[in-house]
Length: 328
Image 1 (tube, helix red, strand yellow):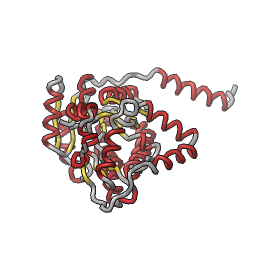
Image 2: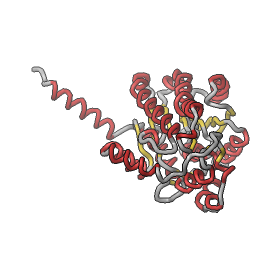
Image 3: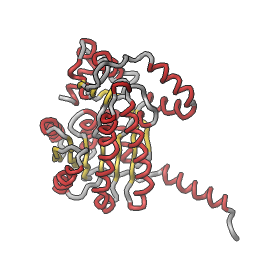
Image 4: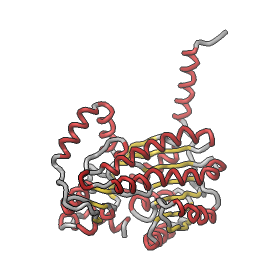
């Protein structure tokens, strides 16, 4: 007796749903995690969360001083840590990363958290700005996945890409950032489907604003002081932003569960639903919000947030606490 195709389809969907409802948790104890951008900010918070779950860490970042401080912090928490000073946007740096990581054996988990934020009017953004963020948010993780794929496949490992709600909804004054994060979300989705047959599970997380102390590392354009004051203030508002530790916990939870894609933070989730359910209304609201933002400036030169601090941002206790904790 032949079963109807619809019945077979329903049975298949039910089987997949059952598997999703009761996933086997991924035990991080003893696992080798290669963490890019792990020397400060969210990356350091993720390193602490991974260390608390027993992972061994290879931290990759550009600045040796930040790496040394991060390694001291994590070793003080009982973690086994090694560091690699490298620019992940440089294809020639891959060999150094792979060689250093080999000391801990095959990589079980690739967690790409390295990133760059540029805040400012589109009128002051150059084509190079777009290329710079595309390199770090999209091409760097692509190269890393390709280089590590044999190891990840042998270990039936995992990949986690930290993207952004800006990869779901393009936000004014963050156009290059949003473009690159849209690309990163697409990369994560494509890798998820293509690498499953090789035993590799890919998770994409899309956080909203987080209190990581990293606003001072962002570059700003346009009316520098106004632009930075707005960005740094919103980035640390309790109702809009999430603390770094709970954000890191939710992100690592998504990795352990093997989720395909996760929004992190209530505001990020609400904005994502608004975009999906009412795209025209959301677009109109963002266009209206853009009118309230600082205007363009005469120079297209970027400046670091720390260079254009104002009393408003310098004396923000939440911002200062996050900087002391995660951007020392």
